[in-house]
Image (cartoon, rainbow, N blue to C red; front, side, top):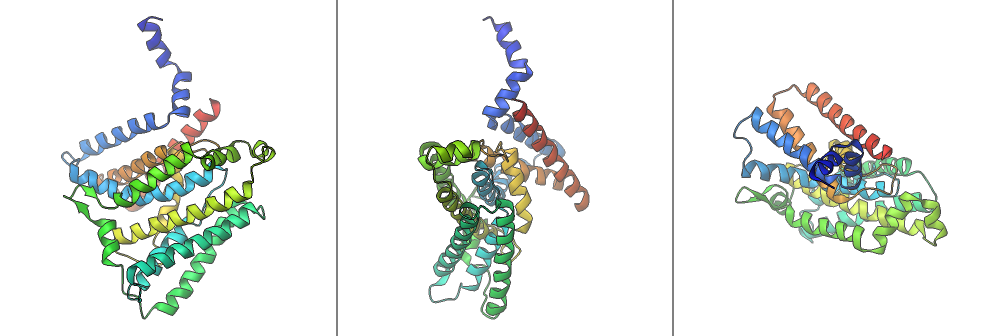
Length: 329
């Protein structure tokens, strides 16, 4: 095959659809580069190592929340309880900062409460076959209600966000490298290796791709789903702790505004809402894209309502285009 033929092959629509389906991270990196270029043109000199550090720092909690959606979407589900669980984790840790065990006790209690919520969700989805959308939505209200009860009980003892959480959530090394990468990098490696190199990861894809075949092959889907929602809840709690440290705020609704962007980051990153296709690598790039897009709209000085409309429209267009192309492929 000569060079001209190879060039023509790369120009075909089928080739681009196959690339978008099998390696979505490639066009996503191109889109991210375009957004960075646009923001530099809109405000020359803004793109710098320090600016990059700010973007990465803000992207990390969103990427972790989007990772919850990625894992659950691989099985054909979704987790709408991550915002309530993340908010609960940050708030509970703040209220226990002066407990006998200090910050460590607060984090352990928050993670344990998150794991319990994930366990109950997993039992509802895996054992009682409640639809994930309904189950996780209901669990979010349960967690929110219990958080409000806890708030009333502990209102006199709360002492604010611990210094250690503020350090890891908002501080950077040399104003470039955010310290929250100390949490994010090991977690990312666990997820990537877990999905690609373990039997459990393959079961997630199998259940989402063909649940009937997975069941006939002997897979105990209910066990897989219980573990899945426990993992998702613990990840949401970790993200909530980082957001609390980043914003220096602890409230029962802190993470609510990150719920839909987390779902959008997973979809933009190439995870199919129908299950069986996707990965955490693309989700990370999707979170970066949404963070840079938010920064771009801020630089352009658009009013908040206009920014919300533009932000939502771009998410819908990109997600719809990806879904259409991959389904046609």
